Image (spheres, rainbow, N blue to C red):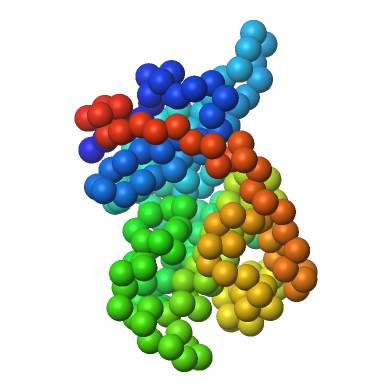
Length: 211
Ligand SMILES: [Zn+2]
């Protein structure tokens, strides 16, 4: 098993808000959060699962997770999590994915992991593309709950899961990876994800410690 810890953090440029790791041929993005302490700044990894600040993340089951999320119990998390927050949205993503026979290989969810899936070729009302759109939309919400400390109403989440949210028709899969939409309204208004959240530094698996 691999982990990333403070020795890895030191290798990341001090103005980066995220870092990338290439593991198993896939790129994994981990967000960073800065906390002001008396004499300067302290940086943490943001757990891609729960959004909590962590000094160590483990590579478990194809993705980075904190210790708590490594022993994954969605029911427990949903009880402890904020209503409409990241844990609940993640739980609903996993449930939706399972129901539709889609394996979420990592968080943050990225539709690009499924472009080879032959189900994408099938057109029609109940299309695989729409399933990916729902998951990418939920990821868009989840990312906002983590980075902006936002929560979403049950109504907005359900509208996405039922595939009826008008924004799903208005925007593309790619748009949803670049723009934060206001899912509480139907307008499709949003704003570009701040560049600082997309700025990345490259680190390879060599930077991680085997444990
Ligand atoms: Zn976690």
